[in-house]
Image 1 (cartoon, rainbow, N blue to C red):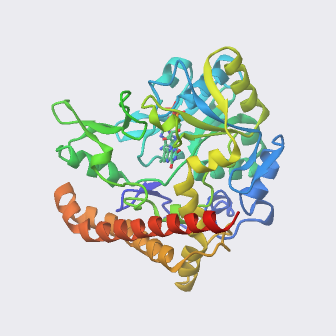
Image 2 (image 1 turned 90 degrees about the vertical axis):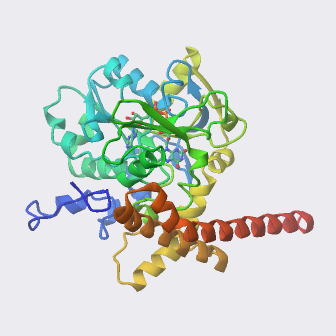
Image 3 (image 1 turned 90 degrees about the horizontal axis):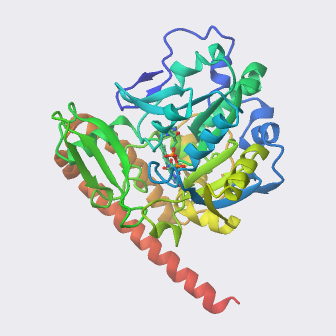
Length: 420
Ligand SMILES: Cc1cc2nc3c(=O)[nH]c(=O)nc-3n(C[C@H](O)[C@H](O)[C@H](O)COP(=O)(O)OP(=O)(O)OC[C@H]3O[C@@H](n4cnc5c(N)ncnc54)[C@H](O)[C@@H]3O)c2cc1C
């Protein structure tokens, strides 16, 4: 894996494949997967058959919850449930190693923790490109079992590797899925560093989720160190919408239909839902999909380690509504456009959803904003110049999105008034 000119890790194919196609068979965006591993539906049937429930949007699952870990909440990004579950797995002897994302010379990378103290240093969300490349090779040398943390496409790649290799199936005992709204280029961190006034070649220790415990959960800050090791921070709400616009996002994310990390033992996200979102200390949404994950949560509630309540399917879906709207509802339209250009697309679900002309315009504008943000940052590498060059696109995207929200609200009211 090598970092490309747009700040993303991509497979570096110097020579022709010498592994008989194993490499492409584990790619989560393989355009021609085998019939038994076509989509998340087929793969989850192999790995998550303990889960009795199924929801088209959530996948196979046992329970859905919202809550937090009393010990890990403040040192984590949301409610600290990821770090809590991984600590429990180590403490119970279910696993001996955790593969998660740690600080490094290149800002962040996947690394191996062998005990709870090491694991604690890997908490918090990093909106930064990482690759499993370096640690995956070392996996078989490790004594004992491992848990791996990853966003949906990484979890899918691991499941595909496990489907091809029984040893990996036994060795990788547990997967923590991080619900993901899109992978960001390294340009995202550079842009934010520049926004706080630090030279893009001199910033270090970027922190993407600095909580404000006296405010709401979404009122978090970005921070990084300048060359004198002074921390500079900025509230993300002052930077503007970094997620709905598609800024600095990977193109592949526009062709991912797995909003909830459907192939993990447990999936964790932010509870973007009232009343949880009013609490700046952070709260997780949780989907358990294996009996071990469910047991850890149930035991945690009983031991008073966790403050957790059940969440209905509907409420869970509302907590990730924006992501479902974009990733599921707009997917068919994006695929149709790409196919017209001859771009190969993997088999996908949710492709038959019809969207209004206004939403089609928004989709086109988002795709353009995503593409242009990478081009413009590559040229400018300076937040002031970048903002100037992106201003028009972002202005129109915001305006059309606002009209769409207004239109949706009116339709909802009319339906409520006339349809009982
Ligand atoms: C790229 C990205 C996009 C996200 N988008 C959304 C979203 O749209 N909606 C939503 O609800 N939540 C999203 N999240 C998840 C959210 O930010 C929290 O990570 C999640 O709720 C877990 O919180 P926690 O407090 O339980 O985790 P913590 O206890 O803080 O632990 C976080 C774990 O994730 C690992 N980790 C951090 N960064 C990465 C990474 N880049 N790749 C793989 N593992 C990593 C850490 O090493 C640690 O093990 C996103 C996270 C990432 C990394």
